[in-house]
Image: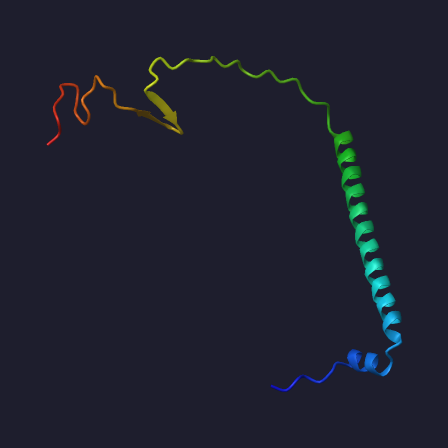
Length: 108
Protein backbone atom coordinates (compact mmCIF):
# COMPACT_ATOMS: atom_id res chain seq x y z
CA UNK A 1 0.00 0.00 0.00
CA UNK A 2 1.62 3.28 -1.05
CA UNK A 3 2.07 6.04 1.53
CA UNK A 4 0.09 9.22 1.03
CA UNK A 5 2.08 12.20 -0.19
CA UNK A 6 3.40 14.50 2.58
CA UNK A 7 1.18 17.42 3.48
CA UNK A 8 2.15 20.99 2.73
CA UNK A 9 3.08 21.60 6.35
CA UNK A 10 5.30 18.50 6.45
CA UNK A 11 7.04 19.60 3.23
CA UNK A 12 7.66 23.09 4.64
CA UNK A 13 9.10 21.63 7.84
CA UNK A 14 11.31 19.26 5.84
CA UNK A 15 12.60 22.21 3.78
CA UNK A 16 13.08 24.50 6.83
CA UNK A 17 13.72 22.34 9.94
CA UNK A 18 14.76 25.35 12.05
CA UNK A 19 11.25 26.80 11.77
CA UNK A 20 9.74 23.91 13.78
CA UNK A 21 10.26 25.73 17.12
CA UNK A 22 8.79 28.92 15.75
CA UNK A 23 5.72 27.06 14.46
CA UNK A 24 5.30 25.23 17.77
CA UNK A 25 5.38 28.56 19.61
CA UNK A 26 2.75 30.00 17.27
CA UNK A 27 0.47 26.99 17.79
CA UNK A 28 0.92 27.18 21.57
CA UNK A 29 0.12 30.90 21.53
CA UNK A 30 -2.99 30.31 19.47
CA UNK A 31 -4.18 27.57 21.84
CA UNK A 32 -3.49 29.85 24.82
CA UNK A 33 -5.49 32.69 23.31
CA UNK A 34 -8.38 30.31 22.61
CA UNK A 35 -8.31 29.02 26.19
CA UNK A 36 -8.26 32.54 27.64
CA UNK A 37 -11.19 33.53 25.41
CA UNK A 38 -13.15 30.47 26.52
CA UNK A 39 -12.53 31.20 30.22
CA UNK A 40 -13.50 34.85 29.73
CA UNK A 41 -16.70 33.85 27.96
CA UNK A 42 -17.55 31.41 30.77
CA UNK A 43 -16.87 34.05 33.42
CA UNK A 44 -19.07 36.60 31.65
CA UNK A 45 -21.84 34.02 31.35
CA UNK A 46 -21.74 33.25 35.09
CA UNK A 47 -21.65 36.97 35.94
CA UNK A 48 -24.64 37.61 33.66
CA UNK A 49 -26.71 34.81 35.17
CA UNK A 50 -25.98 35.97 38.74
CA UNK A 51 -26.83 39.58 37.84
CA UNK A 52 -30.03 38.58 36.07
CA UNK A 53 -31.09 36.44 39.01
CA UNK A 54 -30.60 39.36 41.40
CA UNK A 55 -32.59 41.70 39.16
CA UNK A 56 -35.44 39.19 38.90
CA UNK A 57 -35.40 38.60 42.65
CA UNK A 58 -35.54 42.35 43.35
CA UNK A 59 -38.60 42.71 41.13
CA UNK A 60 -40.56 40.02 42.96
CA UNK A 61 -42.87 40.73 45.87
CA UNK A 62 -41.77 39.46 49.28
CA UNK A 63 -42.60 35.83 50.03
CA UNK A 64 -45.95 35.04 51.59
CA UNK A 65 -46.28 33.23 54.87
CA UNK A 66 -47.69 29.78 54.27
CA UNK A 67 -49.01 27.41 56.88
CA UNK A 68 -48.70 23.78 55.99
CA UNK A 69 -51.36 21.39 57.26
CA UNK A 70 -50.32 19.16 60.10
CA UNK A 71 -50.07 15.49 59.32
CA UNK A 72 -50.90 12.75 61.75
CA UNK A 73 -48.36 10.03 62.12
CA UNK A 74 -50.08 6.67 62.09
CA UNK A 75 -48.58 3.47 63.28
CA UNK A 76 -49.44 0.39 61.30
CA UNK A 77 -51.35 -1.97 63.63
CA UNK A 78 -50.80 -4.93 61.29
CA UNK A 79 -47.13 -5.20 60.31
CA UNK A 80 -48.04 -7.82 57.69
CA UNK A 81 -49.62 -5.07 55.56
CA UNK A 82 -47.12 -3.11 53.57
CA UNK A 83 -48.05 -0.18 51.39
CA UNK A 84 -46.25 0.15 48.06
CA UNK A 85 -47.29 2.93 45.71
CA UNK A 86 -51.08 2.95 45.48
CA UNK A 87 -51.61 -0.72 46.33
CA UNK A 88 -51.75 -2.32 49.74
CA UNK A 89 -50.28 -5.77 49.76
CA UNK A 90 -51.07 -8.23 52.51
CA UNK A 91 -48.51 -10.86 53.30
CA UNK A 92 -49.91 -14.30 54.17
CA UNK A 93 -50.27 -15.02 57.89
CA UNK A 94 -50.01 -18.33 59.61
CA UNK A 95 -53.66 -17.94 60.70
CA UNK A 96 -54.99 -17.62 57.13
CA UNK A 97 -54.85 -20.58 54.81
CA UNK A 98 -52.83 -19.75 51.76
CA UNK A 99 -54.91 -19.26 48.62
CA UNK A 100 -58.27 -19.85 50.34
CA UNK A 101 -61.16 -17.69 51.45
CA UNK A 102 -62.51 -17.05 54.97
CA UNK A 103 -63.85 -20.56 55.29
CA UNK A 104 -60.56 -22.17 54.41
CA UNK A 105 -61.78 -23.51 51.07
CA UNK A 106 -59.31 -23.75 48.28
CA UNK A 107 -60.34 -22.55 44.82
CA UNK A 108 -60.81 -25.33 42.31
